[in-house]
Length: 143
Image 1 (spheres, rainbow, N blue to C red):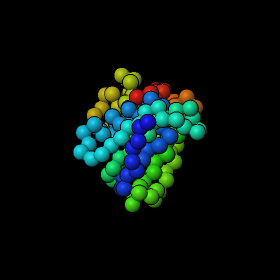
Image 2: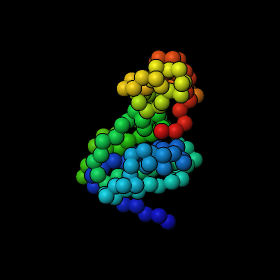
Image 3: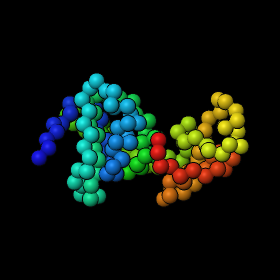
Image 4: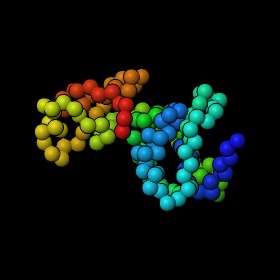
């Protein structure tokens, strides 16, 4: 039996799709953290069969847009004095900027420097986005 204590102050990222916890861990750069971090993989879940959980014993800035892109079903709990002070439910973002890169070599973002890569959600179920400038379709799979 694995036992991980509650945290006093920090963030718990819960209901992560099993196997996606490491993506979020790497995206947040938690491998370089000098504070306590726990990545729990394949934890039993009532809603899903399995889930991943990340517990961070520190207040950190998190880009909720990117986390919603990785897994829109994530719940973020802000912990203070070992109590949940705020619960944030994520969703698939309608617009993302400089997260996905347009792969069309003729797109203005591929030719001109300093133009942001802006994509708009086209199909939420498929995770499909469309480039603002050239309408190139991109299905999100990696950050």
